[in-house]
Image 1 (cartoon, helix red, strand yellow):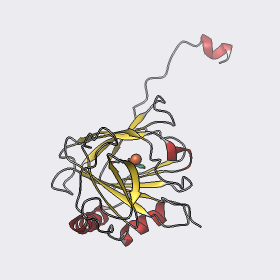
Image 2 (cartoon, rainbow, N blue to C red; image 1 turned 60 degrees about the vertical axis):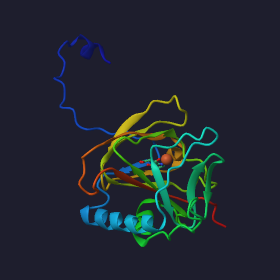
Image 3 (tube, rainbow, N blue to C red; image 1 turned 120 degrees about the horizontal axis):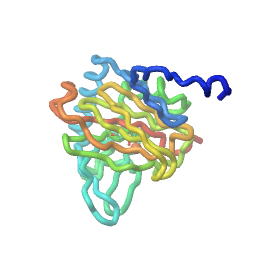
Image 4 (cartoon, helix red, strand yellow; image 1 turned 45 degrees about the vertical axis):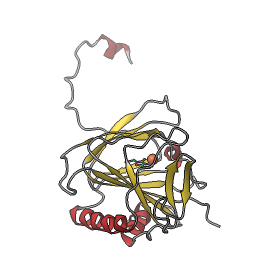
Length: 222
Ligand code: MD6
Ligand code: FE
């Protein structure tokens, strides 16, 4: 600062505070990525998927503590968690059936958002009731970290928290609304993130609660 400005004692009035969302490098937040019609189409597609691959309640490895979120998947692989650990597998843990195919609506979202030349292999479908949450974690059960994870939200707003590459790094929160997309790629691919809470009654797309769909590339393409 120059001598001149230091000696100047007046200060500017505070600026009106805009909504500023700072996210780590490699993360892309696409607010309103899906319009209402696209949200309804995706909601209906998820209903068809879960009619064949019902939501189940995963539990923590070793402790067996149940998740507050229930899960299903579509695509050639699905992410599961039980007492034996976290992993991807081709079949539903309860029905033993292969996961339903990845619908075109999701493949299309991946093509528009992922900037990655191969299709996703898994889409994890999380359902949150009004009290569900998801602790801070890193998605690291994949072998291909070159590919981003693409996330789509439907229904009630989530207070999503995202930080850095250690649990202690500072975090910030983003309200993920119905139709919003967030992509974690590049350095943000390994960023800690989670869902602090759901804001009940914030959307009328679903009867209640929130769906989150995360598309992933699991294996390295040949
Ligand atoms: C959720 N999302 O929004 C949880 N993971 O319900 C995630 O865990 C997530 O949004 C990887 C990339 C983007 C995500
Ligand atoms: Fe995640």
